[in-house]
Amino acid sequence: MKQEKQRKLGCLILFGLLSATAWSESKDHAYTSESVSLGYRVYIDNCALCHGIEGNWIEGVDLSRAQFKTAVTDHDIKGVILEGAAEGRMPRFDLSDDELDGIISYIRIGFDPDGVAVKIGDPVHGATIFRGNGECSSCHRVSGHGPRTAPDLSHVGSNRTPGALSRTLLTPEKALLPINKTVTLVTTAEETFTGRRLNEDTYTVQIIDSTERLRSFKKSDLSLYEISNEPTHKPSELSDEEVADVIAYLLTLRSTR
Ligand code: HEC
Ligand code: HEC
Image (cartoon, rainbow, N blue to C red; front, side, top):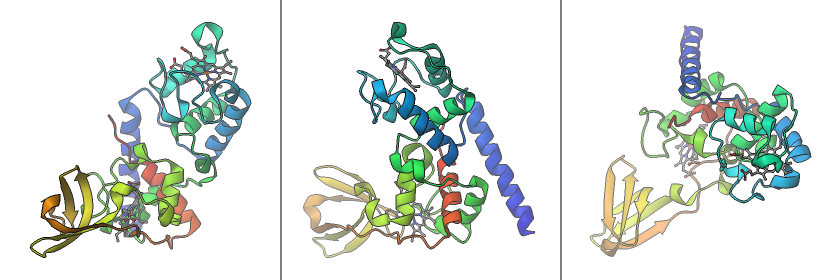
């Protein structure tokens, strides 16, 4: 029975991956650790001379931020590497498919040097852990399912590198982003709210409170507005393998814009 469930879930996710692939001709690479570390080596040997270790030496091109001149898809990047660019100022390279895939993985994970060392496991198993013993779905929302009290992870794979995901899970105190910090508000009427900021400007702040209600406050109506530096996450108690699987799953949660 459990296996049946897992199999169904596997199919669902595979389907998700396939439709993400179909969405553009840019083949969504499985960003395996092997591929990324191969890409890193090939990059250092062939590209860093002109593009710099951080990928931003060439005017108008920042490889680490996926900022190119004409290239859009992975297929385009391959074309640039194989054919050269700018009338030969970038020479053409004769690289194997594995090397090309590696470089593209390295570029697409945002040059995260930590990402090179992050183990990326099995996304299907990762999804099972996310909803099962990892208990992630008891706080996080994905594709419209789950509570709103913690950050929505529906697109986390597009926005975060493997290194950042790994830090969130293993050393959360180093990963806490300002927008994700828990806030405590006390109004001049002495009502207390805790929650997560959705938005803030000079005069107002909007939060999702601990009962999942959206609330908006004028800052002038608050007697206390405190932002906690204490992460909700504790270092994960999952095994290394399980963490690698969860990271692989999170990387599949991509926006298809
Ligand atoms: C000899 C210097 C040189 C080397 C080596 C080099 N590049 Fe470039 N690259 C350039 C220049 C110059 C441009 C800007 C082209 C332009 O202005 O249109 C560029 C542009 C690019 C672009 C953006 C192209 C576009 O049209 O959007 C990509 C992607 C790129 N390089 C990837 C790489 C990769 C990957 C490697 C290593 C395999 C590499 N480059 C090696 C000089 C180099
Ligand atoms: C008790 C509720 C809770 C549980 C359980 C939980 N999280 Fe979180 N998570 C949060 C909160 C709240 C934040 C915002 C940062 C913070 O407070 O630590 C967060 C932040 C994150 C982020 C960073 C989001 C970003 O914008 O970068 C990721 C990724 C994440 N969690 C993944 C997971 C995974 C994977 C699991 C399961 C292994 C999990 N979380 C379990 C509440 C939770």
